[in-house]
Image 1 (cartoon, rainbow, N blue to C red):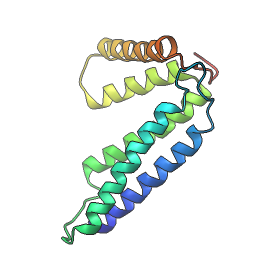
Image 2: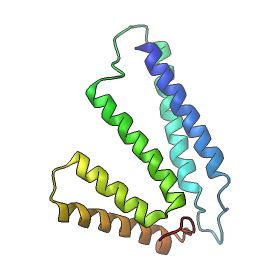
Image 3: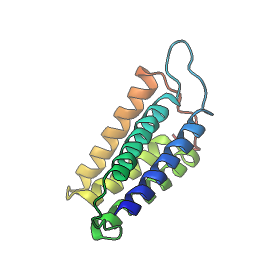
Image 4: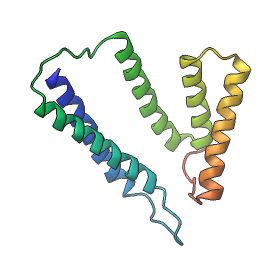
Length: 148
């Protein structure tokens, strides 16, 4: 289990550092409004800190218990992470609103048993709220992708 936890911690620390690197390439803030890279950097710093804490605790803990990396629940998590990576690619190619709607619809369909109209409505409302919050309240520009 120790090797697995240390490996996962290292992967998440590397992922957070890569995210910070790419988020630093986004446009800077204008007029006191946070730039589009502010939130990914903050979340990545928190993720790096959490991964560091897991690694630190794992190194201090001398017990050796088993960590299942390929159980049924873990495979669901890996598929979810792969879907999120695909979502990040689609956001840059297709656009925020369309990609987010389909990502939310897929996750809501997979993790719940709501009816089709409710899944579509929830996906639409959440996408619209996030877009309006970032575009109109936080003034973060959404200028990427071919579609909306």
